[in-house]
Image (cartoon, rainbow over all chains, first blue to last red; front, side, top):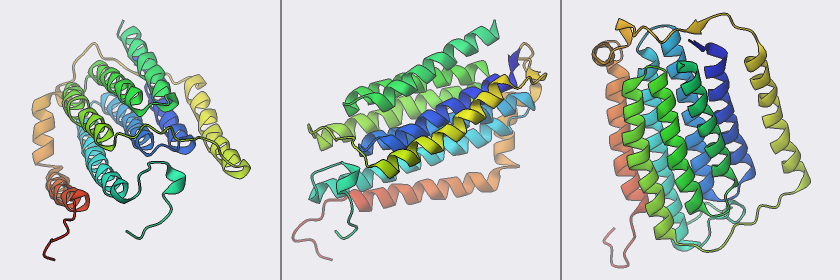
Length: 100
Length: 169
């Protein structure tokens, strides 16, 4: 027997840690990792609701979330690599121009 | 018993999540990310989402973490990013999580009588049913997802491509 508030609280806690990491860090790679953490927290809540309602829909939605996370990581890394080629930094404060 | 296992994996994943965002070296954070992802997959197995746990291990621990490691190796930057901020952004980044912390305490201390009994494996949560639902009810999102992945493949190749000097435009 797993109480629902425990599942939701764990998911929210991991989401919150990801949000804090995204706000306080300035390293681009760690910010991407914090985004992965946020998506993981959402997945925990989705799996918990799927168990609570006895349906596979929770797993399916979490599957789509994982896929979006993969897409986001791939595009984010492509952007980081192409930006890094002409500006040798991954400090977020120095990344302030869009022109290539 | 199941609750104990759940709490074990939950504590593990929260601790490693905190360690991810506090490391100075990004490579250390990547290792903690692998740890955190594996403990989250343990949470999924406890919540009877077996397929999700397996996908988590295969895609995250096998794919994304390795991608992070490769990108850090390619970038190969030894400088440490300074983390100083001005007063107003610091106020903002403390105010936003505080609201969510209050919400988490509310969720934890609110007495919810219902719980998920995981001693019985529900018929509707088995993998056969999941695959059937994925190809009947959710077939349109499934197909859109495949188009999105193709777009991401092409788009990230085009963005990250090295532009040569004698490239015929």
